[in-house]
Length: 341
Image 1 (spheres, rainbow, N blue to C red):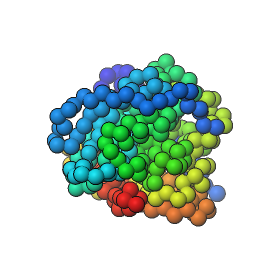
Image 2 (cartoon, rainbow, N blue to C red; image 1 turned 135 degrees about the vertical axis):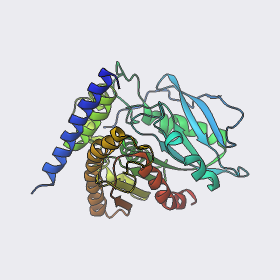
Image 3 (cartoon, one colour; image 1 turned 135 degrees about the horizontal axis):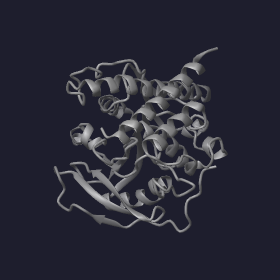
């Protein structure tokens, strides 16, 4: 690890410890507008020969972000009739590097017998998959709500001959985003799943989590997302505050407790006996997951108050990919029922 990388890692750890401290303390007694003229994006096929029989890479032009966005699609083996679509979002790294569904999980094998299109945007690092109010000097122009809810779906529906029935799911940073997107476009998604996402943006814990991702990891400025911290737009994007907009959807929410679970072993997947990786997963991954557990409990309470049913799963475990692979499988019956309507 470089000196710069090491310093950033240390600063991130300090921030995450602050998040957990806030959680412990608490445990004791308008959406940015889309650009005018948004239109269906152009598609450029990057791979006509479908790898592994079912994987297709697309470059989808986003008018709102003024760039091409790489999107990886898993198409069903049986394409004899229209199929529904699951939009599956990567975490903080946004699919850049190897921290994404295709490198870290068995997603290709898992959906092998599923009659569904799986659509995974591959370049959304540290963006929270939302429409930013300002262009960020480091993270650029982000208009992800516009792209995901207005630009991309017509392209996918046209290219893949879908049923028009959609669900959305995401991990970590994108667990927050999946809930917020489902609230922002209630007619687009029949189901939503959030794995280890902090479902808050306007609380101390939620803001600290966003700062840790956007500023400490991404080098961006969080005030470019929804304006100054504490401004109305931060509350307008808060999944707990806006939980009533999830009514009528199939909902699956999961979080580890932050305590070591079955995958938190020195010989576990992604650790391979490396003591440094193991210590990082237990310490930093445990802190992050304890914070998401706190947020998820708050969302559960809010949904209960509103009388909105949801499937919620808590298990021991840290903030790491093996648990998200497990949770995709556990959430599948909920997603599949909604997609099959």
